[in-house]
Length: 164
Image (cartoon, rainbow, N blue to C red; front, top):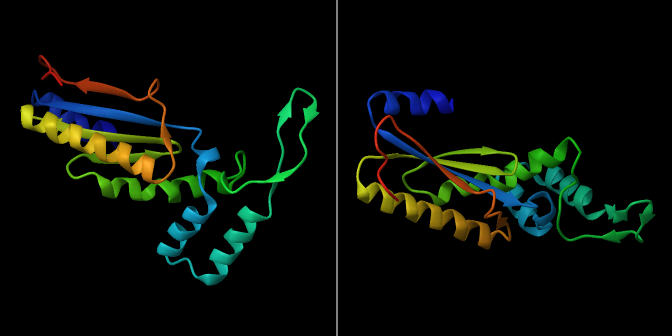
């Protein structure tokens, strides 16, 4: 899908900038109440919403360091990693991130958000920066942190790139 998007632009000597956002510890930072509100928004029905509420609230967690385990505790955030539902709940949680961008094309995968943008002029770079700022604000609003070390911009072009 991504190659189908970028290939025509690069072949026609256009530039495509892709911003790869990495969400730091996304599975651990999903607030249960916010996730449940988002699930309500998707109209899954009261029975399923109650089940998810029970699934998240009834979990006992612990920390393991080597062979030493902490006492069990209840967490108000995080979805179970290594479970079938964990990645699905994460995707449902971040699904509305795409609503905060205006001009870029978004792709969501696990704890990553990719924003692709065709660059034709300096104004497009300004618009891309506005979308980047919107994604950062969305992360803050949703109590998620961007991993700045893993968040990258890649420029696809067959000519000299327009500087950001």
